Length: 116
Length: 111
Image (cartoon, rainbow over all chains, first blue to last red; front, top):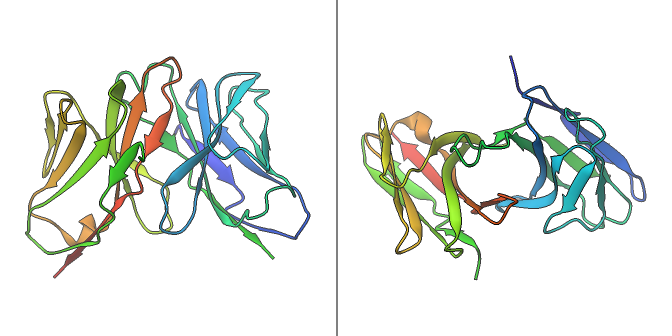
């Protein structure tokens, strides 16, 4: 079955450490997104990519980095510069015309990152 | 002003009740509209798209009012399993079609 796989499900980070969250999709979607969700808050856009080897900053990109070397993969690195990284991280994807044809966005099951 | 606004609730309703949520958006150039459902500690899942003419899917009805810039979701005959947070999503034109999410409306259906 097609879908988006995020790993790990839970991740613990020490102060000053970089960690990378994985996001892989086999839906043949061109666009991929990373969101952060804090308790009681909506989803905030970190980075997005609409095509391989290209990505754009979202609303809260500081302290994060991404790469898009393959269509299927869009890993997110949370760097030590991100001062409050504890949150629920969600990866999503969409087809080029999906949002135009009202197909929406497909989400992975998320990664819960905690600073210890 | 937030781009997409929702009443966070919670809406606390008995089984069988009819409940409606509204969501307002600020960008008049918005193109696509969706309602997502998010269960506690889970990822959002597409509930339904919202079409200009309004659309229905079983007990759920979605409507779009472009003049007043809001969308609505009506749930009839509420079930216990409808308890969740409902997210409004708006996608704007301009080449990027990046979705903007509301904070969500919490629904609690009790026996």
